[in-house]
Length: 92
Image (cartoon, rainbow, N blue to C red; front, side, top):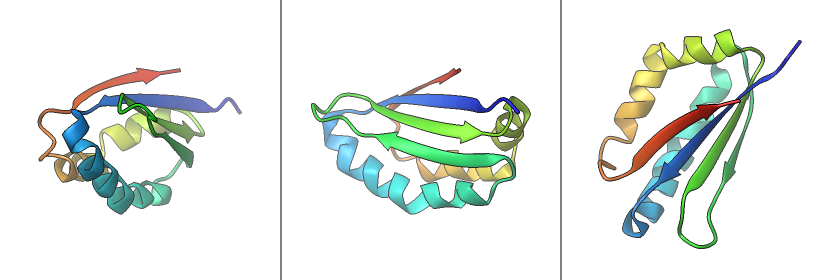
C-alpha cells in the first residue's frame, strides 16, 4: 500500500504564532480518529517563519474524504480568528 503525505505550509504573522500553536495543540488530536489517518508531524520554525504540518494517510482518497468531511469544516472554523494566516496546501 502506498502512503499519501499532505504538507500544509502555514505562514502567520509573528504575533499570531502563539495563538496558532495553542489552537493547533487543542484541535490536532481529533484527526487521529479519522479513518485512513496514520500520523502527523508539526515542524515549528526557529526563526518565526512558516510552519509545516505533515500528515500521513493510508491513501489519497482517505485524505480527500477528510477534506470533504464535517470534521474538516469544523477544523477550519476553529482557526477562523487567524484571518491573517496564509495557508497553502501541497500534497506529495
